[in-house]
Every structure is written in structure tokens, then in C-alpha cells.
Image (cartoon, rainbow, N blue to C red; front, side):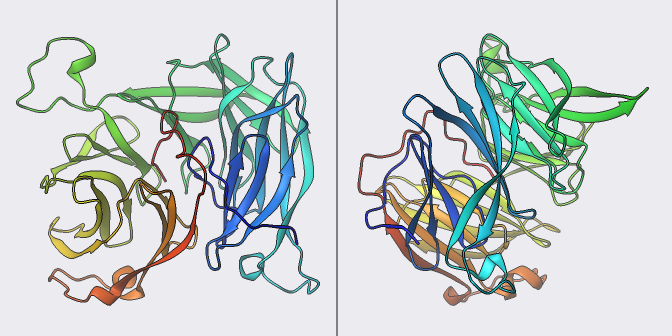
Length: 373
């Protein structure tokens, strides 16, 4: 196992887990991973000096990693199998400390100008790729056949987010700062088709409409809902919206400002989890709201700010990056995951944090970062 002693900063905050233990780190054309249990960083892959990684996607369920690679006059997509380095074949990959990548597929008929986003479906059957300017297309690929199944025009040139539904492998969403597009994959007459529905956040009631851009709120956090057919997002006005596939609003709720911006929203079976960044106090706040009555049932303040958050695929932990480039692992007790309570819980021990490591170089750029699940 090759370990890097110093944790290197990246051009973008990490957004993908490879296993429940390993979060993916990109440093230019170098890929490594950090073990969130012990903070060790392990080298995985390095491209040659004439190539760069434009985007990537992981699928921990099927142990796959997809990488879009850009060179001077061409691009390609490579899919790697995530494997364990353990000599014991019976060891579960989520329990191993050392992993490696093995090339599985190469997609060659790719857009020349490359891609800004990739996402694999949960069943690893499909992959969606959003191409760069001037192509600006949404491409549907078969992973097993490395074949392009359908292509359609992208609705905007500033896509910030692309993800498949966790339960429906024919449904995915893309988003900009102010619009969400819900896409559905259809197979008809021996062909695949992509249909889309556009949704924009409603304006705050007190806001005066002055320009087209100001008629909708900015999206800060976006994810699919529990059933996989609805999506939920938070705007800069601390308003939560849950919308179905057709664009119909199912829930709207405004959370108290508390002088803290909501950096991320997650959900469990019974609760919405809000992670707030209190920039002036340089602290972070995690809150649990019961889905039935939208009442606060649990809250805890941390001595570090929440700049970027990633939900672990084990659905028990959240990796948090603070404004000092330190990575923390926040663990949620099963009491908050499995029990439905309408009463306020006063027990600081139900959510604990542990410092994992610190990036030693300059702060990652936030220009391309979307703090989403």
C-alpha cells in the first residue's frame, strides 16, 4: 500500500465515496483516497502529463468509478472496478483499509470537447454525461456495452449538478443555480429517449420582481427525496421545497434563519437533517427536524464551521470540511436514525465528530463546488 504522508488540497472539494471507508481525492491528474477512519491517504491513479480529469462519478454499491479524461484533441471515459488489496478474498470491501483500481471499460466514441459531469445509475446499467461548450448535450450511455444510447440538447451551459435517483434507474436530475430539470429515460420502438420537465424555485413573497434572473431563488442544496421520485432543495432564504417529477410542489417550509446559512440538507426515514454554517462565530450547527410536524427535535453545535459536507453511503456518517481545510467525520447514533420521536432530545452524545486530517495546501476552489448529496 502506497501512503502519502501529507494530505494534498484539491481543485474541488471531494464529493464521492469509493467505499464506506474511503473518500475520493482529486489533485489535478492524480487520484487518491483518504480513509475516514484513520486519515491515511492512499495513491490510486495518475494520468500522463498531457491528460486531465474533467469529472468523475462513483458507484459504491457496484464498486465502480467512472472518469472523464480530456486530452488536446480528444476525450474518453474510463470505468474502473474498485477492489480490495486484502489477501483474504472473503473480506468485505467496506471493511478493508487498502483498495485499488482496475480498468474495466473504456468509452471511445466520446464528445471531442469533453464533459463537465458524469453520473452512473444505482444499478450500474446507465451512465449520464453532460458535454462541455460548444456541444452542450446530455448523453445516455450503456455501461456494459460502452455504447451511446441517446443524445439531447442540454437546457443550459452552467449545469452545477447531475445525479440519478437512488431508487428509479430511469430518472435523473440536472440543476443550475436557479433551475432544476427532471429527466426520464424511455425505451420505445427499439430506441432510448430522454424527456425533461423544468422547475424553478418560487420567489420569496416579499421579493419584488425586477429582472428575469431575480424572479427565482438561488438553489443551495439539492437531493432526491426518500422515495426517489421527488426531489428536495434549500434556497438562500432557508426555504425547503419538495417537488414531484411533474414539477408539482409537495411541501414548502421556511426554517428560522438563526444567523446561519443552511449549507446542506439530508434526510433519514423520520427526519430532515440541516447542516448550518455560522460564519461569524466560525461554528457549525446540525439540526434534526421531524418530517411529520417539522419541529426541531435535536440540535448540536460544533467548534468548527461547515464549509462542505458529504453523506457517507453507509447513511450513518457525514464527512464535513471546515474553513481551515480540515476534514471531520460526524457520526450519528442509531437512536436518531431508527426512532421516530416528536419530542426534543437533549443528549449531546448522539452526534459525535472526529478530526480525520487536514489539507496542507491552499483552500479548494468553491467556484465549481455544489454541496449536494
